[in-house]
Length: 278
Image (cartoon, rainbow, N blue to C red; front, side, top):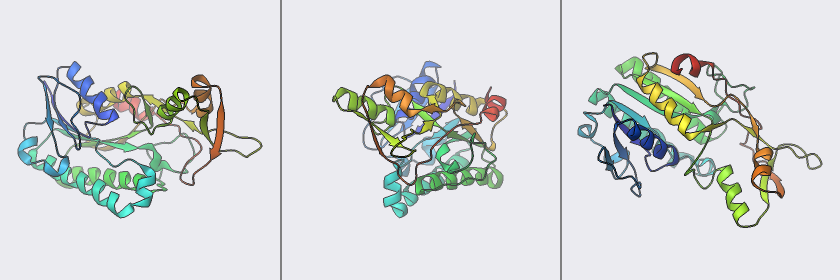
């Protein structure tokens, strides 16, 4: 059975990957930080302390590394660009180096669709990236590092650009989670206004279910068509109005102002995912 190491295993997507891989009888080593995940399984090993405590011996018998650990809060990256760059890029480089020395089969990096910035939709992998805040730029820097590690050091790598992932156990600061929090508290749901005061308009996002994302990671690892530093969009290929979602969850809506790093519409071109991952 394959042996996987997942960084950021405590997180929303990391949790889904772990459960999906264990269901398929994989062996999983999870790397976390402040708290251990609530997973108890004889094929699951948890390493506390984060990437900085990893040694080559922790990776020697691993087949695939799934790198999800990242400081993901965009406002925090804007306020602390130096600190988050050191943390995010530094930890990724360290993990790439360890992976290369250990001779793993493939390195799979979780990137973000937000680095497309103000490109016209649908977003295609060949477009010139346009990161408009530090978090997306940091992800892009790590993408280039993955590609270079493949070319220079022979480490098979693949990059998945994730769109708006939703599902069970999602982070409390995601839009859908916030909608439910407001609903439970009896408050109106807040929507960012991409239109005018007299004619408000909500953002549109390409939503993809976390279970499907886990499936994409598995296929990216095992596919014989990946490993050359490819970048692959992981989305549904459809843009959904945030207002439509809000109306399903609650009945009252309050419009708030748009932040300067927010893009009106996200939509993936998913042809490459179909070709390389099936």
